[in-house]
Every structure is written in structure tokens, then in C-alpha cells.
Image 1 (cartoon, rainbow, N blue to C red):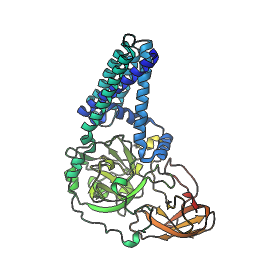
Image 2: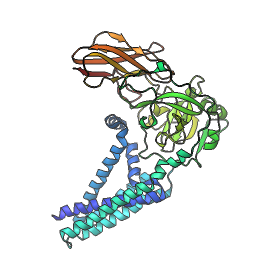
Image 3: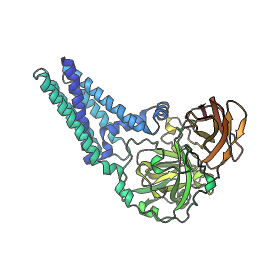
Image 4: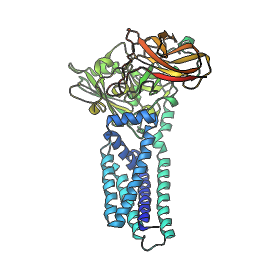
Length: 496
């Protein structure tokens, strides 16, 4: 094997050892200080909005595994380059490893809630990576091919084993499942009646009225969901208020809690997309908490912050609206809030896209003004205010279907306004009124269906909705940025 090939292999082995050592150190000190996750989070923060939107459109809720896989490939590729540089002109390769470590340290200690100790995993990774690289490259001229490959393989395997061990050690930290299982939700002061039979259609392939927790979409900026200690968690209510205060989880859970069914919408949802879901949330009124804090005159926004570093700018008037059930939720579909969806506490605000309302792993509510503060996505070109737009989706049919009576079905939504009408267009023909299921809640999407006498051939179906105010869903196509996509969902079906 040529010397250059051995040098590249040495670099890959050193990168594997570095990753393993860094992950193992993070498991001991702080799981979220993992070099890979720290750099990944930095990449998420620096990625242009248009590219984030494209990745979410392509991979949906698999965007984070995709990013981690890409980072792993890049780290190994960087290791190969470092190996070549070290063989060409030592200690160039080691210096490259050190530089990568410096970047990882910077990414780790600048994350929200970071401490100086969070630098340790990246420092250890750089030291181990540099040492292994120098040793392996130094042995290239003196060792036979088998001996060299054996040494490189040992470094790689040890790195993989250390990384896997770190994953196992931190599973409890990341999952926090034992803490979640120990939570006993308080008895609600008001419960929501279950949907009536007329509120949903029994149609195969139609989106259910309520989304199971395991199926609920997840879009956020956290590569690894924060492991929040419920015992030390506190919510700070502060800013332009007369009476700032803070609450422990126990104190929050002791407040009046009620259930509210609400459909949440991600602004990254493309027309016809599935980045939305409905749950019955258990929580306490944000309006009541704000009344306790007594916002000062002139305040018009609440900047909410999560443990992952995310912030959202929500209009104060929306949160104070007595007709809108804005919650600090601790329960989801009868269970304690899952970690992936914001345990221990998250915000749920009907009628607004999640990037301006649905902060997960909530830690702070700051009453302020739109002209004085900006949030995570508004600093990246998205609108400061973003009410959900009336929209609709065709769930079925999506595949070839036999000719005859075909049930076309889907869901439509106009959060906090309600759906009054859904129409279907077939092959550019007239708009036909669809049958609507019952209206369980004005804050929940509504199912629809249409029984179609379908002839053989290829057909184009389009759907549009009208909300309770008479506003018809626009056919004008706009992208997800800066405040939600518009257009009509169109599918082409084959009738056989």
C-alpha cells in the first residue's frame, strides 16, 4: 500500500479515536458537550434559512440524523486530510487536529447554559486525536503493511467502542425517561370531552384527529434534546413587568391545570406537508401567569426561551386574549410531556406557527417589545409575527386505485378561526363541495372527504379550504420563508 494511503488511513483511525474519547468524556461531564453535538449545533445556528428549509423539506423529522451522519463523514474526511498533512510535513496534521479541537471547544462553551467544564470533551478529543495521529504516521516507514493496518484498526475500533459506550452511559441523561415516568400529572380543573363519532371519518389512510405522541412531528434546533432536571428546573417570568417571579416545577404543577386540544404547525411545512399534529395538552394558562406579573404599559411581546438556546417572539396581546387557550403544557395526550416534545414544560399557542410560539424545554418568559428584542428565527430573516394560514391537504388516494367509487379525504386547518368549507377540483373542472366531519374544536384541524366516481386514467386532484370568516385558501404559491407556505395541495393519481 502506498505511503499516502497509509497516511490517510492513519488519519481516519485518529479521528475515530478522537470522537470516541470526546464522547466518553462528555458522558462523564455533560452529555450535551459532546464535540460532535456541539459542532453540529453550531452548524445548525450558522446554516442559512433557505438551506435549513431545503433539508427539512427533503428529510422531514430525519433532518437531525442526516446532519449527524454528514458530520461524521466530514470528521473522518478531515482525519484523512490530517493524516496526509502529517506525513507530508509534520506536525501539520497534528496542528489541524488541534485547530478542529479549538473550533469544537468554542462551539461547546458558547451554547446556552454552557460552563467552562463543557470544554473538556473537545480538549480530550483533540489531545487523543493528535497523539494517535502522530504515533500512527510515525510508524508508517518502520512497520509492515499488516502491522500498520492492525494498529490503525485498533484505534478505529477503540474509538467506535468508546463512542458506543458513551451513548449507553448517557442514554439515561438524554432520555430522562425515569424522571418522566415518575411524574404524576395533576387532576385537571377542566377536561376536554372526547371527540364525538361525527368528528372523524373512518377512512383508511386519513390523518387521525389526534396524533399519537410517538407520531407527532419534531422540528427544533436541538441535535440532542436537553435533559432537564425537573428537580432544579425553574421558570423565570421577567422583563417589563411590575412583579417578576419564578416557579419550580412543583409550584407550576400546583396551579390550575386544564386540557385543551390544539393542532400545532411548523412554519417549515410545505404545501401538503405533514409537519403538523394535534394533541390534547394539559397545562396552565399563560394569560393567568402574565396577569400575576402585571406587564408594563408599552410592552407588546413575550420572548420565550428554551434550554436548547431557542427563543420565540409571541405577541403579548395573543397570550392575553381571553378567547385563546395559550398554555404552559406539562402533559400531552394523557401522559407527562415526552422529552422530545419539551419535558418538563413547553408553550402551546393556538393559531401561530411554532417558531413564534411553541418553545420547548421552556425556562424563561420575558415581557418586552418587538422593537427591542428579536428571537432565534427572526434574526434569520423570518417574520416576527406569523399567524397560521388557512390550508388543506389530500391524504388519500396517493397511489394507484381501482376505478369506481373512490373516497378522497384529508384534513384542513385554520387555527383559532375554524374551517367552514372544503372543496375538491378534479382535472381542472369545477370546485366540488366536500363533506366535513364535526368541528371538535376551533383550534383543531378538520377532516373532510369526497366520494368520487373515478374513471380509468391519470387524474389531477386539488383541494382548497375556506375558513369561518369566508377567507378562501389562496392558490398563489409562496415558499415556507418568511412566514409559511401558500398554494393548493395537488396530487396526481392513477385510476386503474
